[in-house]
Amino acid sequence: ILPPDAAPKQESPMPKELTERQQAIFDFIAGIIRSRGAPPTIREIMEAFDINSTNGVRTTLAALEKKGHIRRHARLSRGIELVDQGKTTPAQYDTVEVPVLGRVAAGSPILATENIDSSVHVDRSLLPSSGEVFALSVQGDSMIEAGILDGDVVVARQQETADRGEIVVALIDDEATVKRFDPGPDAIRLLPENSSYEPIVVRPDEGIDFRIAGRVVGLMRRL
Image (cartoon, rainbow, N blue to C red):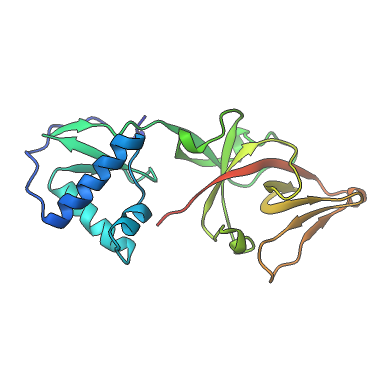
């Protein structure tokens, strides 16, 4: 499954010859695709070839694309597609379109149309085998010690309960927040993963509209 803008294109010219470095990276990409059915991330290419920056990888990928060996899809986190003699050889994409939530209207179903801002494509292998999923863009640095940074997109399985210690998307009135779940006999605490922040404490007698929207199962980051 390719992104919506991946319309069929006319055949490209014969691929041009690669430098030794470009060939090595192309072979690495092709090998990963053969072995697991999906292309590597930019970070994986960086680590495999001791490249110090994402720009270094992007420059090589741009050269491979210009020379007709690959095609890139900006909307996919692993959006590299091999091209063979001008004919596309899909990288066995199996992706799911996941809705990205914006502001959530109080009392409305989490996946109600009015709550959805956009969507992202996520590798099916990264998602739970059952249940509806949604995504949420993270704002702020309250979860940095859990590896969740400002601007990241978390993917969550829709569910109304969670176990102690799980990272959840919680709704407080009509605001969504990502925190670690810590239920107690008299109150629920939503714990940040940043010592600069205090826990959010929710007590039943305070009249706050609180619910769990989902459990975080994955993370997407734009490099």
